[in-house]
Amino acid sequence: MSLLDRAESLKAKHAALEAAIEDEARRPMPDNSAVADLKRKKLKIKDELERIAPH
Image 1 (tube, rainbow, N blue to C red):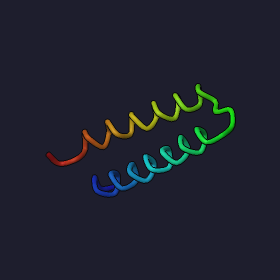
Image 2: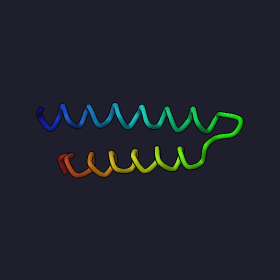
Image 3: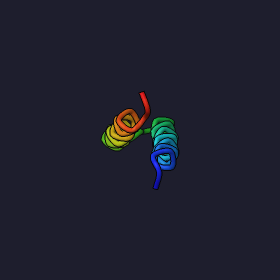
Image 4: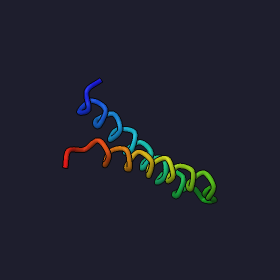
């Protein structure tokens, strides 16, 4: 897998996590621990994207 493919895959995962966070937040009683877990995963992906992105 090339770096470009990896970056695209990570961007898709990042977007999916953002959607999951928004869905959970819209629930009448959102699960704060689930939201925090999703945000941690999203941050890890963002960090990895920054590591592999050309400067």
